[in-house]
Length: 195
DNA sequence: ACCCCGATCTCCT
DNA sequence: GGAGATCGGGGTT
Image 1 (cartoon, rainbow, N blue to C red):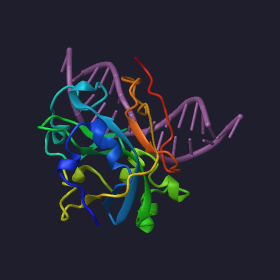
Image 2: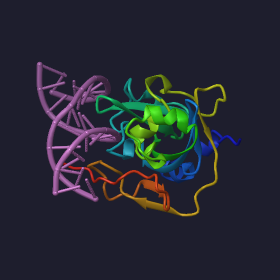
Image 3: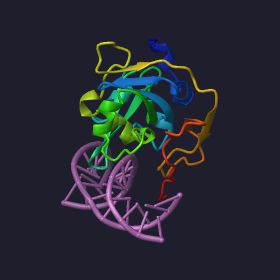
Image 4: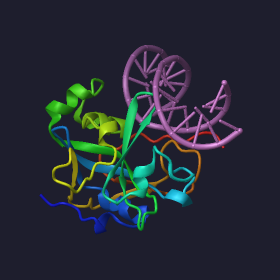
């Protein structure tokens, strides 16, 4: 089992994001092969939680790369990001979708609405739910084998597509979303409203 | 105290 | 495949 390096996760989120495709996130008895991600570029990116500076909520993004940034949304869901900023600058890659390659028996009961394998983690909050990730995992070191959630390297997909990020109303011109072209487990696209 | 934000589910077509 | 309902928390005033 290959583990990513801290250096390999340090840099411009736009460069790190596609390299995470094909990697595996392991938690809660489930292994998820990442098939869709989005880059969030800190102070340069109005859609990033870190755009307006450091707060208690987003502090993890200023920490070392390779840690998990977990945020709560819609009053009932969590989404997870891999921190990747260089020199204490905030940056992160949102993990949007994955294929469950191991531990389906754990994932299904956590994803009551999932009818088929590809529904288990074809969205950021679904991914978090399938792996039972939540508040407690915020700040976890993905490179520490003792961590409750770890990352493994996997083969980068042969074909990668890019496009606008999902559901955000700013910076829509930037193709900062990356996905494995032929994966059936990518999320459904929505353009953000407003503004 | 207020306003803004967003992912998923359940129907329905 | 699409539309509408659902909810709690973060940040700022």
